[in-house]
Image (cartoon, rainbow, N blue to C red; front, top):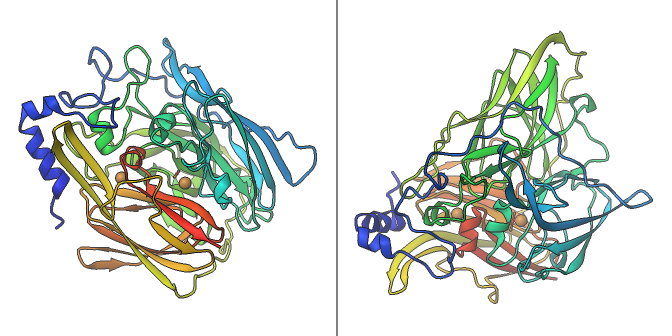
Length: 501
Ligand code: C2O
Ligand code: CU
Ligand code: CU
């Protein structure tokens, strides 16, 4: 059994002392409120979450239009700015949006394409960037916190998508100290790179389901992060699919659909099941796996993606959440099982017969023997300082420092990374600039190998667990790695790797 460690013990002490609690405040967390209530802001009067309309037809994400004249080039503009959304029927919510909408427009390109996207930062008074999560783009085009785009400024992000890079990526801001807030206020979108020769039957369609997490105060606004949010990561009151709560999808009996599921929440772990429909896993963060795998449930930690084929041949089917214990700190653990995220109405009329899924999807190259190995230890700390309570989310004992290089690597080297979680919470580990392969997981001395090979850029490292992965950076430059609970990233659980040519 994993023992509850330092943060849990310190937190227990703090919670036992109301005076300490009242004093709790932390440097660099100016937006934080005390933890004198459950931390979950239930609206101004405390009468529970604002109700959202449900059961509306599922909206496909609007596509970002390609302004390029010829083939092989994708050219567009993304403007980040304040906007107003209507989540609840009768009140406005101020949000941040890309091109006026949240989630942002779906970017769809093909492997081999060149991409040129002009980013216009029109967020008042805040720097931002666009990070292309999971994508093989040059380091200086990847929206690092070291390359901010000032409020009011424009910049062009340009990169070529190599052959074989088809996958389910996404884009979101990555400015220093502001990523968590800009994302929960609405800035995130899906970026799908399509394969030139796609083995998945076109008859299955291709639908992106972008999952986000919303908390609304009684007046329709989004409350700022509380102490509980900073500690656990912000978990909202409503999980939305393409911006909608429990929308409905109409399909004919016998339909198979290809679905890309994104966990674009700041901090919510989604253990998912499809009640009354069979799921087959066909892809991970970085594209198709080698062969389809039947799946009863899928754990999608923050920032992870999967591609599924879902067979609707029984009747009404529901994408629902199951219970998952990710090591919640303090009071206010959200109810996370039994949320209906999407409901499929399956008609009695039989669909046209669907072509079968091929037995092999694509080969995945194995890495050779690693020549370098690294060990990253994740810890949490909490200390009473004269200025108030200070929490630390650390990698190898250090909090993020933009001016410090934590790892120097060489482009083209195959590396073994060992991520050791000695903390009390699960931490989804993410590495920029490349995709990696999971080798094994170890917990309480028990080693388990993954059942299939997959390209990943984010992997959950459960509390007390060690994850070993193999990776290679092909391009020189500075890259980030961090916990993708965005509040933890903000509090220091991030490092810098300098890849040299
Ligand atoms: Cu999704 Cu450092 O990013
Ligand atoms: Cu990333
Ligand atoms: Cu974390």
